[in-house]
Length: 147
Image (cartoon, rainbow, N blue to C red):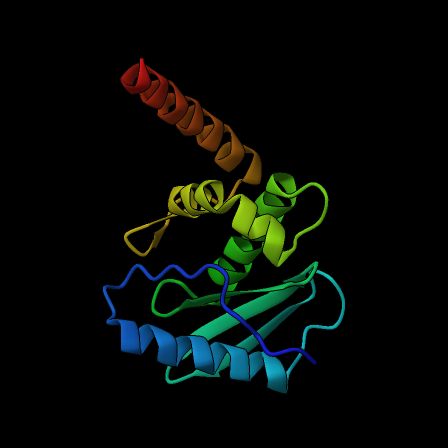
């Protein structure tokens, strides 16, 4: 199997870069130990008191990590929303290449779902609608500056 590479990573807890790399390694190790069976099947793992929920979507493995109020059920719903939104953003298939091409929109979408570590939005349609509004505003603002 090819080595796992991180294409997009978001942490909302203020952790240092070394801590983030350590957690990415833990999450990837969890998926090597317990690979999701089939597209969208979710696997739950525990590491250092935190819950990890992950799933395969196309050639991507998407991880969510949380603790406290962000329990397994919330993380599972968040993961389902992320997968649904990524499938809309990448209609030709959820791939690393597709994610890189839509990196800015993917980051905006994640920021709509999670704000400062709080899960705010779990409806993929609402996330896409909010994303469209913000993206249109960003493009209009850029066009105004370029004029």
